[in-house]
Image (cartoon, rainbow, N blue to C red):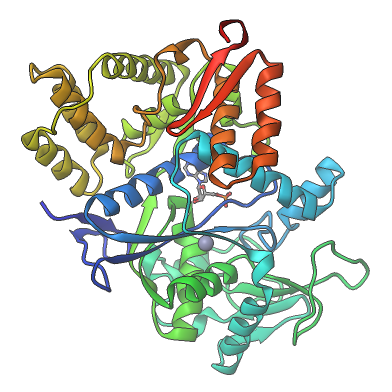
Length: 460
Ligand code: AMP
Ligand code: ZN
């Protein structure tokens, strides 16, 4: 069965055909690095990772670009409030630049703990100020901008179909507006460039044709996706909260500059909810991967939990659900590790599994096929080879798991994952530092051709 995906633009599941044979351009909106990522954010990246693996399964070469928002994301979507980075700086006493550095590194560690595939390219907003200024200059030349005393704004009244992605009721919005518009002409207009306050210096600010200041949040994604994937590429992803504002504004900008809606498919992951409320970083009280690790869970148990819900349904997080996922993962690992190598895959099971994956990433059903296989009476080496094949999409790293790792505390497992990344990057200084850190925690690592082997110090 060929791959079919749900496209938010058309509100349909439709067959996926790449714009260029065999190649797929995939852009995923990345984190705003003013604080740790919460497990809700990470659910969206797990969905995107599964999408990427499914594309690879279908034989495509994926160019996967993820941005890092390290400037311009204000505390209010209405272009008011503080820059989240400068606010993070006040909260911690560190500079905005140090905050960005620190939380980018923390995010990438979470990324690896969840066994997410390394993107082809990470790109930071602050490394692409010139591209954003060039983009805004083109919007200005095309007549889509106006200035106010605090910045340069996009004039959404110039586009009849502004907000189509969100099926936005513009007239209703404008009529029911509760927030003061200030100098904005319409409630949906948004900042492209904001001026630094006249009476103070920002930590992050740049010169521009319009004055000293910083870019609005949305322009970075239009500018960087065009630079790295071209102005018309295959798939753009993010969480469902991005549909109404961030992605609608990306589309408005790119339409006005390049005449495209960026991507052929727009895909959105639905939210992880905690106690019926959306989990938000700005509430200051949220669950991180590290929190789960401190409670004794393996990060990959959280990944497993994400796979049990379709990406287009809300997932309510509970401790019990995570415990269930940890039990299921442990059982799968133990059973799998007891089976010998050397079998060939079972083609019928592979076809059934792939059909579920290709039906808009139906991972809950794909997991059901996995368990049916595990419990089948096929030869155990056939089951093992087939599970290996499934794991290219599930990403549970079953082959990398060691039987004795049941006793490895999760905080040790996180360091081992970080060290794996350091080794892959040939960052030997970091790899040695992590080896010493593990040693101090009572664990030895030995490097071999097929990876790291971990053992408690007393076992040598
Ligand atoms: P941010 O760091 O706030 O820019 O968000 C990073 C990503 O996480 C974006 O794709 C958001 O849409 C997504 N996101 C935010 N909150 C949640 C949530 N509770 N569940 C799932 N995804 C989320
Ligand atoms: Zn974006």
